[in-house]
Structures are given as C-alpha cells and as structure tokens.
View 1: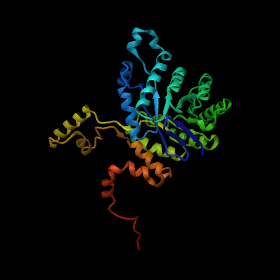
View 2: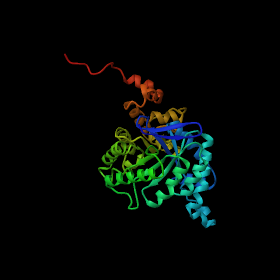
View 3: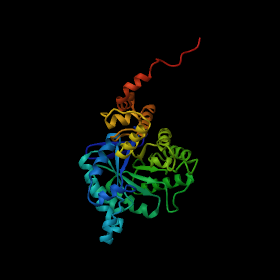
View 4: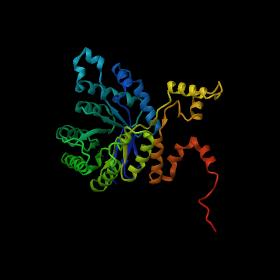
Amino acid sequence: MTRTIVESATKTSIIGFDQPFSVIGERINPTGRKILNEELERDDFSRVERDALAQVAAGATILDINSGAVFSNKMAEDPRYADNNFVEPDLMRKLVEVVQAVTDCPLCIDSSVPGALEAGLEAANGRPLLNSVTGEEERLELVLPLVKKYNVPVVAISNDDTGISEDPEVRFAVAKKIVERAADFGIPAHDIVVDPLVMPIGAMGTAGLQVFELNNRLRNELGVNTTCGASNISFGLPNRHGINNAFLPMAMATGMTSAIMNPIALPVGPKKLAEKKAEIEAKGIIVPADMDDETFCQLFGLGSTQPKAGKEMEAIRAANFLTNNDEGGAEWIKFNSTNSGAAGAAGGRRGGRRRRG
C-alpha cells in the first residue's frame, strides 16, 4: 500500500489507501480573508493561532499554511511589497513558527513563490508536505530540487503550460509526467500526492464522475495518493455542505486519500444571532430571558457559538468506518459521544426489518 509520511517534530500523519482519510486544514490562508490579511499586515497572528487550534480540534491531521497575502498599506509606503517574492518568504517563516508554537500537528507549506516554499521548509520541524508542483516546465525545475533537497512529499497539481484541461485524459497524462519527472530526481511515487483538479459541478455536469475515474487510475496505474480542494465541487451552488457531504465519501470510495478543506463549522456570530432573535420575537415566540446564546442556537437550529467539527467531518468519519479504516468504529463513537442521547432515543426498535410470515 502506498503511504505518504508527513511529520512534525513529534507527530506523524500518514496519507494512504489503508489509512483514515487525511484532512488538510485550509483556514490559515489570507486569500479571500480580508480581516486575516489586514491582521497579518499588522503582525497580528492571534487569529492564526486560534485557527490552528480549532482545526486540529475539529479533526485536521495536517495544517496547510498559505502565505499569499497582499499588504496594500505597506505597498503604498514601500513598492517592494507589491512583489510576492519579497513579501511571502518572511511571512511564511513567521506563520510556520507561530503555528508550531501552539500545535504539533504536521504542516503543509503552501505557496506559488519558490522562495516562500524554501523559507517554510527551513522553518518547519519534521517532514512537511510541500504544496505544490505542477506540470509546467519552469515549476518542475524550481520545485522538484527543493523536494529532493529537503526529502519531503509534494502535492502535484494536474495542470501544465497549456493550463487546466477539462479532459480527464489530459489531466492524467500531466500527473504521469510529474511522477516520471520526480523519479528522475530520485523522488519516489509514494512522496507524490496528486491533485486531479476538481471542477465545479455547477459548470460541468461530469465533474464528479471525472474525479472518481481519475482517482481509480491514479491509484491503480500510478500508485499515488491523492488530494483535492474539496469545496471546489460545490462552488456557486446552494447548500454547498450537502454536495460536499456526498462528494467526499464517494471520492474516498474511488481512491482519494486526502483533501484540503475547512474542517470547522464556523461559529454563529453576534449579527446572525441578533437577526434570529428578532425573527423569533416577531413571530410572538417568547424565549426565556435567562437562556444563553449556545442553548438558543441549539434550540433553533443555528449551529453553535463555538467552532466545532463541520458536517463534512461527520461524512468523512462515517466513510472511514464504512471502509474499515476506523477499526471497531472507535473514532466514530468518539465523534458522536455528545449525541449519544439523541441517538439512543431514535433507536426505539431493535434488529432489522421484521420478516413477514
């Protein structure tokens, strides 16, 4: 069985066909997160610390650290800040140091800037996962020597100099090319984690089927582990969690062994809480004055005021159990321990369907 070893100074995470699904937490990423971006520009890493701890608590087995920030204010004062090659190496080093100070979870160093990748590798303890190399010639020549030098596994994204193909045959060919080029550097296939590229199902009806087919081929023909940006599948659609919850177990069943994703159900904020209370009051429903916010959220189906494991994590843990990668269901039982009362109440009848005489 192919096993990709990712390590911190004290902990090992294994990505493999015979292992529980690896969840690579994606939250430490300033792209699209305006508040986090602004905090990083002020050297405020408190949210990074909270996100690291919350993701591990929710079940992340590896933490992705992305340094792709844009420091607009500093840019106005110093034009060097307009260049990511200037910004990202120092930021990546700081991010790695901050995260390692609060958790021993293995890391994934994520950047499009080679200097940031090396800065992260230098700062990281153990054996991090590197994200990423593509089939582009320039990228292969820049990243694969780093992979070899630091003896780390790498995410291989199935696009090349022609861009991202909608044809799964082309994406498979790119993955094969990367595996072969890696071998030329002495990098074994078990240290390559291929991202076959998940397309939005709303834009391409065959997107799910393509990934399932690619998972099988990548596992059986190339013998490599796989990953993806899990939420890409539901981009632009309503009830994204519903689609993600179906997609992840299906992808697992066809050979996918990890995903870069958000393991957290984000907490209910004050604004949403106030809106719901106003809605309830307008309907004439009287809520006890001493009811705390967490109880209110649970009672009216809002979720929680605290960050908790998301529904996608529930689907993954169930799939781990069903594929015998959670022996005896210990992790499933642990995950659901807080709901044991509800589960017991729901199970009134014993046994299966009664046979008719």
